[in-house]
Image (tube, rainbow, N blue to C red):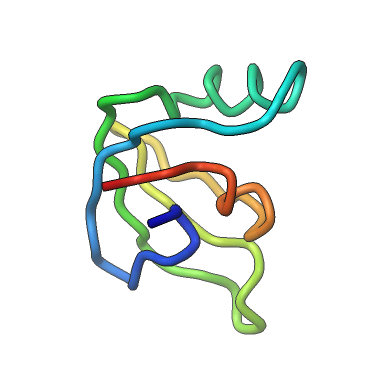
Length: 72
């Protein structure tokens, strides 16, 4: 399952961040590291971007980027 497949209010743990280079590093810097719990808290009216809670922060990330984060 990937981060974009979560329903609003559903929590999961990050298993893997796919991608390379600067993109992957940026997601890791935002706190999307394996073992971290994330929760989808909402999305924009047209479905993009997604709002997710990582630790004590709420982030907005594009749906395409969320597809690269595997959760379980």
